[in-house]
Amino acid sequence: MPSIFTKIINGDVPSYKIAEDDNCIAFLDVFPLKRGHVLVVPKKEVDYIFDLDSQTYNQLMAFSKTIAVALKKTISCKRVGLTVVGLEVPHAHIHLIPINSVNDMNFANEKLQLTSEEFSSIALQIKENL
Image (cartoon, rainbow, N blue to C red; front, top):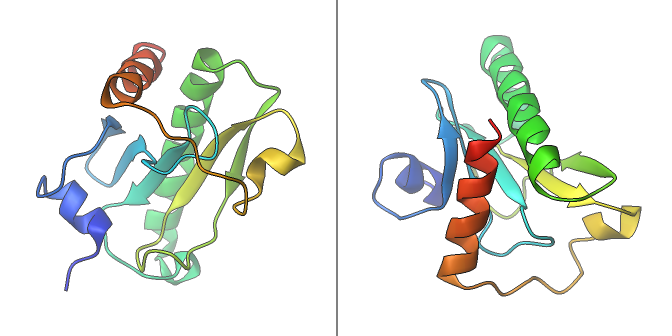
């Protein structure tokens, strides 16, 4: 059965897409820790990030850097944190989270609840900074 991310990639599930190329896609996390929390996903469905072939892994990292630079221009923060947890969805992915302290990366924190309009606005702002 395809992962939720594969369904997003295939257009079967809507998302707040930031960017995509032939190998990767970036979209807003709908359960964000912070405004601008982005997921970057390889289009190739592989569960564990370190099981990706080297080329796909390197493409994912390069694509993540591009998104992180645009995210930093969009959301006021000290850094864009990068983390890979990989337990919640069986499809390799990277979390890019605007942070001002290490606690901002704590997945036990309460998730933000944003409106569709807020998500759309954030996505558009990040796209404009690509």
